[in-house]
Length: 402
Picture (cartoon, rainbow, N blue to C red):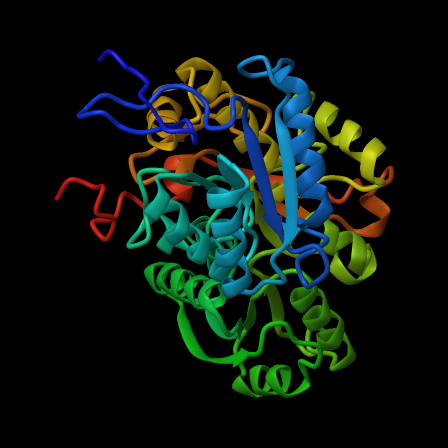
């Protein structure tokens, strides 16, 4: 289909003419935004590291677009939906931002998704996990990149039940992510013949897990499932150790855990935990170069959120370059056409609902005497093929043919 550009007035804005897609660049070049948690519970798993990852992707893209340097802006959404939506409106409407990345925390991702949908702008989520992003909140210009609650459940939840952990009690973060993770894991537990004895929901973020852990301990469940992330997870694990929960015979299942969490806890406290991840820095010769460059810039190894931000930014830039425009709907269509191939997206493919399906990994945290060098924390137990890790297309998504 032939594309043509119509310039209207002094603003020089590109609009759609009939069925032809807009062509050209809103501000002559490309500007991306990284909206993340810079100071709170999820700042280690995302935060400034996500900005660094985006900058690395731009560097590796290796060229300007439309003769202009690619710009990056960033902001701290403080894990608040209202701040996220306000920032997205300001960026899209007044500052010429073409696409927003990271969006750690499900409530913030869902808030930005609505703003982006209204404006036909791109949002690419690597930090948030709720499957609503590819369900009822799916969008023609929205993408879910690194992982989701279904993939976590199909990894850690399934493996734990198959290894004998067939009765569970959940300690769950009381917002969209925690609710979705508990629900998806419950479905996997019951599918595999296990049962859920109960759950308790804690505020987000939270420092004192005493009462919640005591309820979990009193339940008698074999497994206490931590349906939370970041500092909430590490705080819960540390306090569980103080209560002697594992020593008394119950197991902990950290349903979303990052390498930064393991580093914070230390191997003596984290050893033996099973977790599901979309990226491990020491997986192979493809994963290590990015990690070592990232470490040189930040002093720490990247999480799967950081790797996902890099991958999503690089794929977006390739699509903009191929499309010759920063028009959101045109670029989104080009992204769906192009293969997703990099060190992160193993066997990657984009579905109509915006889910980037790729292989996931079930990992076990090593014992201290098994770790041979700094950040040598994981043993990869198994590879979970993408079509097994993620839910099938949902009819909750209006983009899916009924």
